[in-house]
Image 1: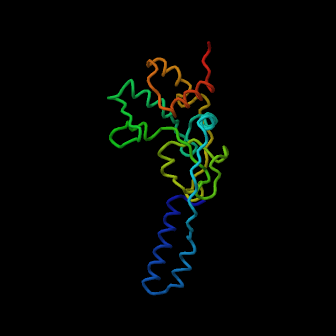
Image 2: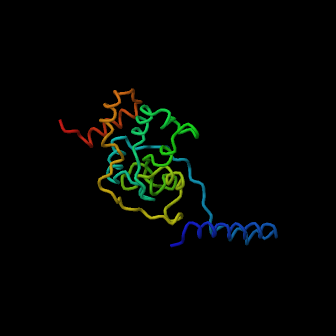
Image 3: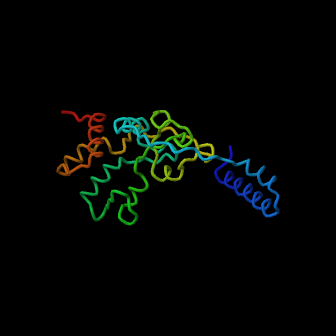
Length: 199
């Protein structure tokens, strides 16, 4: 299997050939070379996201580990709660605005990614098409396929890691039950269901 850099070099080579052919007014050669990497735009796909309950189950299935690079991720609402305790040391911005959010948020937040991109026909709600991804890998992958990137799915390495979601309810209580946004309330309910505390 070719690496990402080998595939990128392949694109470079084809585009170089296309440009040279067009400069020579050799449209037939240019068209033939472009055909090697041709990709037609697909119609826009309406965004459909699984409910929080399902995403929580997927993150738990993957043990909150990025299925692309293997890094342990952390549930984003947990990091926002930490920011309420340490606003100066662990800043959080709801839009992850550069310079106003701790680097941990932008690197190890648990996100979900579609193995087969929705823009390429992947099912947006199929659990088998959704994996846990760190924000860095999710951003890098974009709407590319694993084959194009030369990536493979990794199995979770640490069965005991739960992205600190297993401590979310206790942390919320310990911090005096700060106000939660609607999405965070849904994550709290999902965490309480998946990680019930002994009574």
